[in-house]
Length: 434
View (cartoon, rainbow, N blue to C red):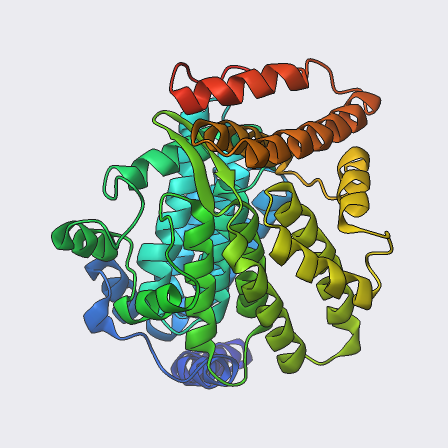
């Protein structure tokens, strides 16, 4: 009899728990998440179905999937994360972190598993699509996701960290050139521009603001897209500002200054990217704005500005923009980053020591050699001589450093000068890229 009573009591308790638990879980989850649910009128049917059927249990299921995805990541089983991440984005589309993780895994982790650059590019494209077409549909006001997308363009497509970086750049360049042949919206037919804006989900008002402030841009280059998405991230952040999006504007603006011009475009091959001198002052203006918005001394904006002043004066001098170069050199001296007696002495020393060389050294050297050939072609012998001389000093400095590090099979400087001349004449495609 006692056993029967205990069994009945257990059954009653179980019934009470079963009735009370959903409401209690709902209270817990409402305290831990934003109160609003996703707008089901804007989501795919599969997401709407999951949202309605699972209700408040979506989060519990997503937590379990997150735990499993984290374990798979620790084990390096990145491909197995894809379906889990896809489900997590369906269960929890309101969390930007989910989308950022999903896109990063595709563009960085999974792409690196494939030896063929075309396969790698496909997964990078998947990551780009996740952010640009899906994540920002749910989170149009997320500066975090805008900054993530900007970084993907800046680092993965436009950067140099991947062995297949040249291939990515060539594929992206040709992709955009098929829609905007010269990369300029200003010269393209109106219907082509409209299709381009719609395909890449660009905002016309932001495009107009960006163009008026720093344009015109070459949209065939990833630096332009990185700058657009970072700039848009700052816009949607409003007040207070978001340092991730702000920092990406600064980084993309520097990249656009250093290599935001297609110095030489070649279908099927990566373009040679060169200097945009008119953006030098824009970078300094942006740094001043960053220092105003984020005054914490740990950011050391004065040191960042001082280094850029010297770097900008170096590249401007290499291209023969002497008046602007001298202004930046004098400001670098005032900031303490330039101690040489003259801009000529600074430029030669910096070139020979590779002090101003970065991972984009190949673009910078070839841009100088092709610019030298182009200026000579147009009768500017003095300008051509300056570009070739500084290109030679610069590349020799980098080449010596790389040879000392054990990097072999680097082409000679003479070979690159001749190649620059061939490329400008249009005789051949580039052959000597290491």
